[in-house]
Length: 229
Length: 229
DNA sequence: TAGTGGTCTAGACCACGAT
DNA sequence: TCGTGGTCTAGACCACTAC
Image (cartoon, rainbow over all chains, first blue to last red; front, top):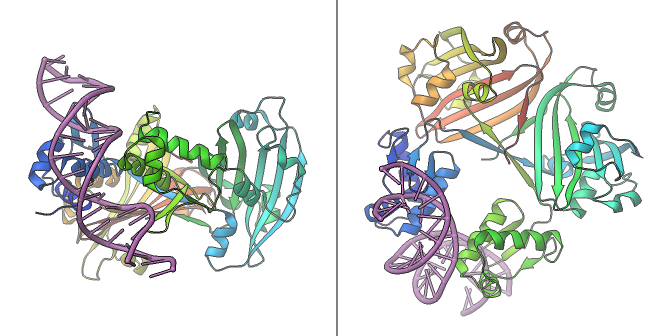
């Protein structure tokens, strides 16, 4: 038998699906599987690591590899530039600045950004358009302590979304998703009734030195997020 | 210098962040980096593969490894059992069946399940409770062609969510997320006003032989999805 | 203490795709 | 054609943890 790590992983999935390897059971150790498949231990390790990342098995030193009792699924979503998202759908992208000012941030915002009372925060609101129609409302706080250059940028031509992405790499990102009724400002910007259900994505972005930006993106009614394959 | 693959990956992230490796630029090939870091090519490969999975670089044979122009972020969410989700939050879990019947499915449902006109479909609706209060409304179609045992199950004591998870492993899952106004049935079950914004998660689950189940889970007002770290 | 997975090495061949 | 990443091998040492 000739086996690559992908086919070994697939065979493992099949055995789990057929209950040859039952939920909760410990499967044979890598060395034994390597002998069975006629592969090296490294190849088997690669395959089992893939199954572990997919949530099918749990691996622990000494304990061995056990089939997960409740295969916890995972779904991954892309977090693209809004411009790229719109243009990727074959629509014309547009952007309009609504508001830009240095302002006192609510305590919750400072805390989530890890910004001390000393560092200023910039608030930028804007509207993303697709084919001229409102697409998403962006309400952003930028930590000027982490990105002082933002002071010199008006964000009238280029959205903060795009400006930051091109200039400030991040190292970690936290994403919350919720359904919320449109507030007054969002309803006006998006052209929907107040209270209309909006898909709201909140992202906190951090660099090596701390919080960079916190953004709330409210998508117009009907918007869908689709998981990556 | 002694380096494991994790520290090599971290060094790569730092170089990208510092723009030593600029966006769009091609970084040195694995063999060169291996010499630089005093590691074997296999170790460097492992590190760069990790950076590629995180979206920092794009790798292609012959072309080499390029730093991504727009570091497309990815956010991963767990798709757990609702019971596990509720109990994990330290709340008491409950379940109530609302409806169970074999029914004609809309064409859209059949298509997404890849179910022919011949195979019957079972519809199960239920309500998940946390501390006795409505938590999420589940509206599910089960492909009896793929899971004939479901005919003999009443789903009165155990939710379809849990029954399927324990019995039918899946191989692929597609997830859609949207904000939608509560319909009449959902509003009644969840005890909210009709039109209230609900976070709706639609999952299509497939096994090796085809579609298994399509479920629409409407979470009560205020629910949040949080990305995994 | 011993069994298991985690990782590293040095070398090899292959698949892809620009030239 | 040939440089690049993708993968496999056989062997080795280490880290964790049940016993």
